[in-house]
Length: 312
Image 1: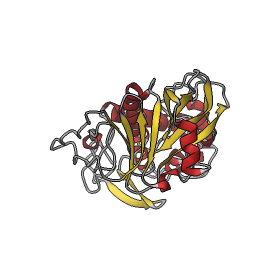
Image 2 (image 1 turned 90 degrees about the vertical axis):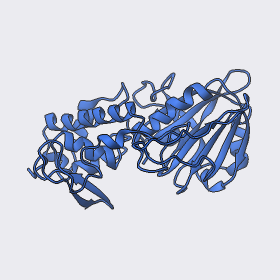
Image 3 (image 1 turned 45 degrees about the vertical axis):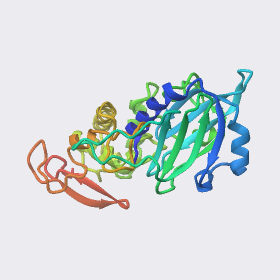
């Protein structure tokens, strides 16, 4: 958490507020958020201050900004970010952007001042704050390389260039360049449980525990079914279900259970109230009425309907 829909909500929030702006300063409050930056804070400052943000791109759960120098030339490296388990990107204008008050069914209102780790100051007086309670996320620069298939690197990308640090990440299900039949075949080549394959970022990126459970419920497929036991048709059904549920989550602003995920203005997402399986242990299945079960799986939990998602 956050997963693909939440990161895409953040990307869409950052795009109109940051593209075309120049980074005028870097403020580091906790160097642990720069652990992936070669050369540390000094190298990051030298690489980004004075550079213009020309695009904000996402592949899976990875975000990055394309950078140009003052002459308009491509910088040759991107400013990359990963939100980890609890990262947030919050945008503050010169007049401030207070958190929106929470509605009763929208989750708690987060505190925008807690856990600020890094801030990027922009030339219009605005500021991008990176907040991270659990410190699994971070920012760093990475040289640009060409995507293996030569197609646009991700949503928001003007071309096939992406950070080398994200080159191993597979395309996600909201990417127009994603080849669903090929992803289904990769899943069917593995003996691993289908849920673990949905979570494997080198197979298909961006899916986490929440949306894997929801996709498998929609596709009537049990979480521990081996990938090799799926037909091509069923594997495609699982992938399409995952894409559909993430599109619905994106339209609802993502899924917020607490203050760990909010958009760039501090708003929580609404999709938690539409979840059919995840977090619904002992509640009736929306489809058949059987109680949803929760079982341990890969140091996480899997939620499923024992009737709709029977062992095959």
